[in-house]
Image 1 (spheres, one colour):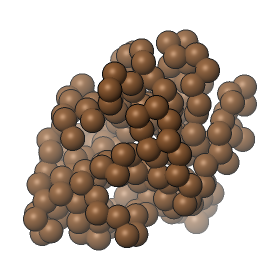
Image 2 (cartoon, one colour):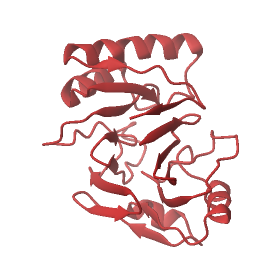
Image 3 (tube, one colour):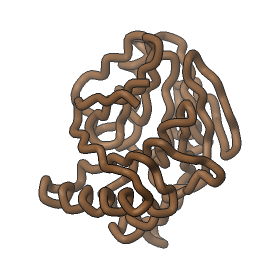
Image 4 (tube, one colour):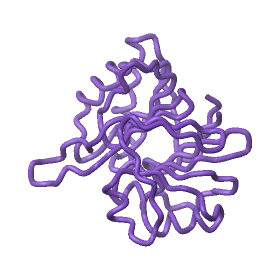
Amino acid sequence: MRLTKLAHAALVLEESGKKLIVDPGVFTADPIDAAGAVAIVVTHEHGDHWTSDQLTAVLKQAPGIPIFAPEGVAAAATGFDITVVTEGEEITVGPFTLKFFGEKHAVIHESVPTVDNVGVLINDTLYYPGDSYTVPEGVSVDVLAAPVGAPWLKIGEAIDFVLAVAPKRVFATHDMTLSDAGRGMGSERLGWAAEQGGGEFLELTPGDSVEL
């Protein structure tokens, strides 16, 4: 399976010529090559993880593919056919097996509503938590997409999250809010956390791809 990191929190997974698009949000400015896409996953309703324009652009290239997302996205994404998913569900679409974890976004502040959020384990290989610290219990994670910068994120909590998951490999995502220096500092800490469990850090910038 091939992973391509796009800007901020967006990912493209490719297997056997088919693609899975994850969290195509407002910060993903460059057009997404969605030819061969079989599904879209949106982890939650915030605009940095989906926009109507992004969904429309993907669906124009791959008409009729399912969009898997929690209830909050279904309520927000009027005009789109959303397949609501919840914690514990497992779905196979094309060459991709999707297992969903968690229920809620990490807390930003008591004044900000806590929205629905699901993490997703893809082909028992890549775990992406969306905007949460949900640990996929009972799962040995090969590759972790770990958020490194956000209004809800404290780097110490992100470090603890990586320590708890103990992946073989980790890379930083959710990084548009950081300067280059800030991203570098955060990535260094996530890499340290991965190393404590014998893992390693993958340095990926937007457009970079890696075989998993």
